[in-house]
Image 1 (cartoon, rainbow, N blue to C red):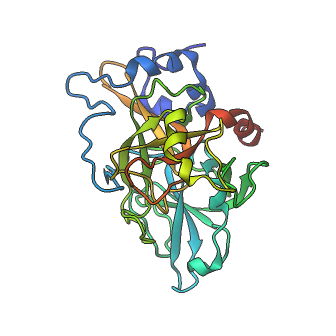
Image 2: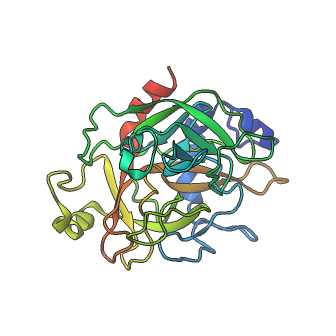
Length: 320
């Protein structure tokens, strides 16, 4: 197999290559650990230059997270308006990954229908108006269906993962590009990961951010997490399962919050393609944002659904 890291490849080749082949290359995967945290002269590593603000981190740069999308419900109270309540990650031309609980919103949340109807892609700003696609703006794509994992049983908080099938395929470009899926159950090598979303920027708020936010957090060891969250156990969630991971900032102040559900917990891998192109950022989704406890409290990390635990299930749905 020829690696896309070989000399002479063009950025256009990356945009057009079969994403499944690109993401699964053993040679690419072997470079992940060695690239984490490394920073060449003039380049930013994934752990540098992040200014932490409360919960939301910092505003994302245009095109920084081209796999990021928002799930939209038609507003019940405002004509020709959309309400965005969850995030999702583009993983192929026609499929996205989100949380299973994002497939439903009660009508008392101000939505006209309980199921999301559209996805917004290609912009870091949420557009609530009923708009039409143009060449320069965000893309709005109807949702064909949402496939929840068979073992998800709402309101329980396990197996919280789902696949969004789009009504039409998207065209990849600088602002719309899929993420790869982290397929190694081992996450101890990941020193820092990032979360992105349009969720609330402070606890107790139901108002989401208009601009995509990003923050760096730590993966917390299972044993430490279960001990910290022992008082949070209930009939709906009795502790970490092997398909979940725990992440946050134990000092508090940075966290996923209401409205960030379904979005990615991810790691950025900067690939050196050739001398004329210093780096080509690719993202691996390590987990799907599931739920948090009173956003940003000290010693209260949030829970995420591991993608590695569901690779076979995802591929069965996406690569039929």
